[in-house]
Length: 355
Image (tube, rainbow, N blue to C red; front, top):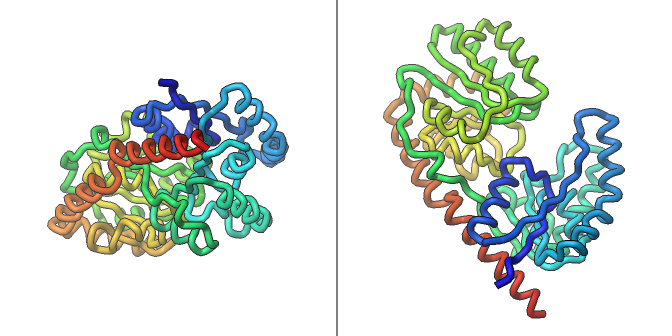
């Protein structure tokens, strides 16, 4: 039988994209062809170049389609690659909303234009992925046909992120695994640990990843006199992450917006107690002082207080991490969820190939 081909439109180097496409290869036996914009947006000039590249993207995509004849197109981000997928002329199309709404930043002058692109993508899509409930809520608000929406996270590989007891239980041993970008508010985390340090509380903080804020954050750690207790690992291979999580007893993430965080699932699977911002994307998974902590935006004092509270309540933490592991096993198991998604794609392809 001929192997089915899928054209993936999106940034193929991103961890989320790799999980998605690898899952389709493993559980759907699909051949994946990828296309993405090459220009990064790290300077104003590059942003302009990327806009020009996007303008001519459809011509390149249609050339790939003529060459490879994919059976289906899938795309991440409803306002960019998803819109291009909708224009591609291929059916079926699956698009995935990456953030809570994909209409970000909320003060962008391009927001009205992005809404037009998103609405068109939603209308033309055969299947729409909401990786979590918070995304489905935002879709319903803009009158998306909810019969087309599949609410399911891609999940994580539970054989890699194992259920192992955390070490260093006699101190707060925390890990942060989000990109070092302003919207993830690492400065709030450092200030909270500065408060704990002033109180004489022992801790070790590991900050994984890279980004524009690295030097700013290193300088802040020095100003707070906690540089000897904070470890910046830089970017690491994903294969090293499970061990770092298992060596920690707290996972901290303070973003100002959130869709569905694979990083949170990885931490929950690895027996880290989650302390995250009190926003809709986290409220889907975490209940305050039940299976984790929800912290008000930009509130380093509350973060410090709740870290101390949860550290002192060891029985509560022990029960919470057991509950979280079971939740991830039941709801975010990559090997189960990606089989369902791959099967759905085959079903859609078969339906359209018989028309």
